[in-house]
Length: 59
Image (cartoon, rainbow, N blue to C red):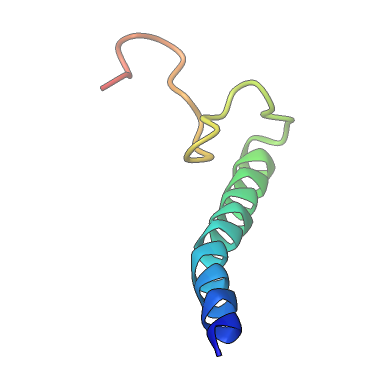
C-alpha cells in the first residue's frame, strides 16, 4: 500500500527538475542560435541567459 505512495512522491519531486533542465537546454540553444556561436563560458548556468559583459549593464 505504501509502495505506490512513495513512488508517486518521487515522481512529483523529480518532474520539476526534469522540466527545469529541458527548459534550460532550450533557452541555451535559442541564445546560441541568436548569437551564432558557442556560448559555453558566456551564459549564466542558472538562467541560460547571456551574462553582461561590463559593469554598466549589471544590475
